[in-house]
Length: 342
Image (cartoon, rainbow, N blue to C red; front, side, top):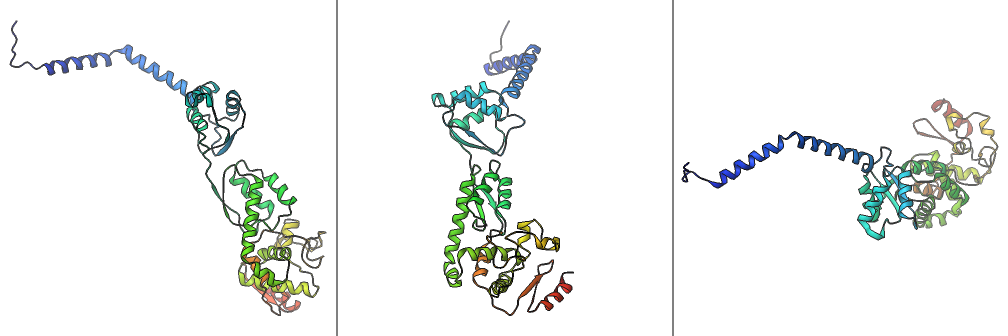
């Protein structure tokens, strides 16, 4: 046999050999079965041991207590549906952080994570706690503030918040504002921050309070009423003048704003019997200001309480659109009711 060395190219020979080997391997049915087997095993292993549980507590804060052993932590995380496999979590922790193990603290999980991601997060003390924006509108009560925070923060103890706030007599002294709290915020910290904000805001208008010759408590109680009785700063100041005048002449305040606080009914739901409700907050059966605030007022209402506009009016009312109508006499007031309310 003779070879034509002129046409000989070693690279062509190598390429042909490699292509033939690849074709042979790929077409080998036993290899295909083995690959499918590995694929099934891997998916089985991942689903039952590595993947996050279906009920993973996304959006929740999970606590790793100081002094807990790795086995205690893995049991706690499995009970809370954070991991499926205690064994693989413990293995992942040891691989990731050696003898140091998991780090204690509160961990925020925004979305589900597999067991290795959970282990890495906990061994690196990646708490994932970022401030959450929450808005407390003006005129909310302690009870209503608790409801807002309970919806915004999964771990927030609203009952503890209410208990502490009522015990410290802070109705009216928790300033409504937009806050940025961590997901693991405690009721005590919320109260401290909101009350400090209140004191900071009061400091900016202390000269107005001093000039009013009223105590801070009186101002806040009046402001809490104004918050519910009017919408604009001007109307609040006019009503402030009316209500302070009623107190000066010994006339009951006769404001309906107290009844949502007492019995949960607004102006348009009240009956004549409701107006006789026994309560020290009832401004129809008692003279002077109620014993405490009925809402947590904003700065505008507090300013209105310190700067009343003096008029000859003794009566006022608003229609369902919030338009205000004033009257000097009771007869004029009754006419306004017939024209604008009934």
